[in-house]
Image (cartoon, rainbow, N blue to C red):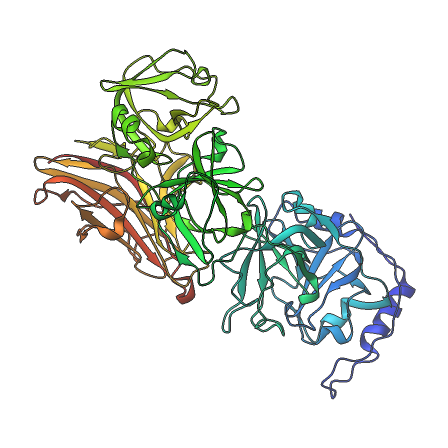
Length: 637
């Protein structure tokens, strides 16, 4: 393939590039304006690099486009972004004050021969052999055209963004800065700001702002609306770069919340005690905090409803619209002036705006082991709490949607399942087993009943810790192959807990093999700590424990191993932990190489034990190395 332009055009280009240069001046020269003809669209040009990471342009290619982002406000450093009708392309130039020549809307022509098209996971750049185009050379490649009009941004929802939009100007609709970021500025004093922007159903994108931009120290707006910027990709994450604060128009009410202020916390038990038998208002200035025990994704609870539990009890929440909160989310809820009322006998906080609630991380609730008779005899005490019943049988219906009864040796109670539940048509188990469920009430007769969150509640897999649905094991092996990829670990009796920061232990898949992984990379908090904890282990005789670890991108010693015999299965911060000595992947080991821990002697411990893999890191201090765990074994010594 070969691309040619006329000799006259080449001579003219040479005149435009070199005829006005005078190295005695500090400011860029004023170039003549010239309109040329593009020989290739930006979309077709980017397609040249699809099969390799970088490609040197050896043909006479001319690109044309309008400047959609310049370096005047400081958020696009030494970079021009141009766009034609087919796509957009950043151009990396080792020069500042480019806006004095190439302001937004300016037509630009690029003579690409000799330059390099670099591709990083569908993020394309035009540079010179992987580096910025030098200040003393860029004028021979980049030609200033006539003044034009900036292209209108494509208006999209977050879920509608595609790789073809990368490098172009887009406007995302119905978004706002996340609750955790709303109190921040666009960037930090000494580091760029990665601020999360979310829509009302939990989809997100990063808005990245340079700490050198002239709006870095301005506070983020708190409403909902639109944000315009140039779409880019860093590794697997889409990012949006705004040109200036005029690109952020958040004039509508928030849908995610972010309030709370100086509200006084009430326990859920105290809130329930306010109810007088008819609609009752909560005093002003009050909030509750707790963990979501309902699972909206399984469909066994209405999309506007949620159940929250703290250390004193549980309560149902009825929002004014569909909410976004998931099972095990920690939430803070502003209940000032809201109404306590009963619906079909179930006490709830009614008509709650979704922006009254905000997430505060994740947690878990250990279900109380109880009998059917205890529920029926003290129903108000247990209403909206998570309970566990052992050795129960089902009767009266063959499917969950048929409304079977749950019977133990003390009595029976209805198991209610909505027709919309994902498991409504599934057959009930034929044999005796255990289950976790939420105590609830409903129907015209205000029937006392139980409700499953999802089918993981059957046989106790939805619980946690001793007495919480996980059997104490005399031996086990774990290679993480049965756990879902890319999800925080919470299965097979294993639990992962965020102690500090935002990132958790997750299952990852690499070259056909799964393992547990922790890293502080992309964690937005200053410090991060997470614990991956085994199922409860029976230490009735001498036992041993072993595993393999691996590391990558070493920059700190972030992995350690601990044991506890008083962990309650839900609150690692309340337990006593002792560090175990073993061999761990170290700086001297090759990246991704699996290192045997050696047998860890547990003979000194008795009762029920838990082992925790603790990862600590700090994105603020560049301690973001990755650690992995696999092939865990526990058994007799």
